[in-house]
Length: 576
Figure (tube, rainbow, N blue to C red):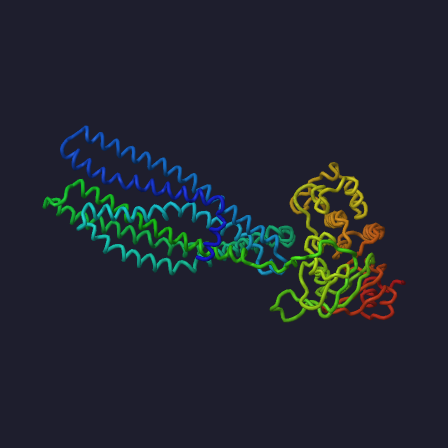
């Protein structure tokens, strides 16, 4: 319940709609509960005595009560819907906002499909709790209490039936809720699994087609889909057991009342109108109990979803700024001091081990190493995508943890190994680097990145639509656009994580020559091709998370067997 209370605090301005909706339900229920008393009066004093004017008068009052109940019911629907969907939007907004504050280490704890489910399916469950559960939650207790009061006031002897049936139904409901509660968490996790398969398949659809694995993916989807179907079926079958139990109890009550009430009518101790009115109250009381049971089931499911949502909301972002965080990066120098790092506290092996290196401001640096040597992990520490476990990373001579995240990341431009463009035009994507950039600045960045040559061939130029994920450009074109986007930031430090792997050697040389014209900017190249870093001021070689060697190309050729091995394998023994 703590999680549900936490989410209810998100109601904010919609709290007023909830209160009005509850009041409307109470008014509607009161009008409906008056009708059986009027009906009993109409039968006993109007129909029995043949008093037409009385019947018309009472009938008009009953019709008015029914109309007022209808109006208040429709008004309730409006306020409840506004509260439910407004509340859901508020939760979704908070969840999305906290996700933007997450560090990579926070996001690594969740699968993408699970986060999507928590922002869609789980929040829909919460909305349905308000939209479908608020009415019976308010209506049922009012109807139950007033129905029993009116029943006892009408005939206390017959009303004893409630004292017998209520405990039985309570035990049945408790038994069902206790068994079904854990199944709702399993159900939502199963939805996570299905979403994961769909998301993975759509993201890798070209690979699936290329390897002709359509059938395999269909089987995988069918397996997850069948698991979801069987889980949902088993959960809802158990949840729906309350319906036959309550219906059986209702009909048994009616039979007992008809038998005992009929005997009392024959003895003259009960009037027919009173029996008819009493039966109406019985139906209302039992219906209210059935509604309460459905509310309990809704609440049970919402508690499972609330727990999953609150796990995201309660997650403390791993990256925290100091209250007096530094707002400006003074220079572009970078230094690693005895840095060790691993992606999770549970990991047995460290990804980086006791790394120390100095990168002077404005220099060009190359980082080489085999797959899994820790190259990308190393540069992600510079702009605090992750934090070190031991040691320090300094930018401009200051520990990166002393900067505000915004200032630090504004000073660092990173072209990731996996290039990503967003839906929209080329101009919209490039303006991510600088939203106020002029066309002249954009074309200058594109020229340095080697993108201007192909952009000029596009009929719409910068206004060319990229499609979702940049599907309308090739891999090499995508890389060059990402480089231009990073250049538009005018950063102090530029990091290229194997970001020219999809372009030919001639184009790569043009890009390097263009970047060489940038002064005062520290450039760090992570590369697989040794030609990319041969002209760097210093080359660092990583091996299994350790710094194996460093120096210029010529120095490493003389001192490092590992570097010579890489050189010989790529350059085939070419001359210096």
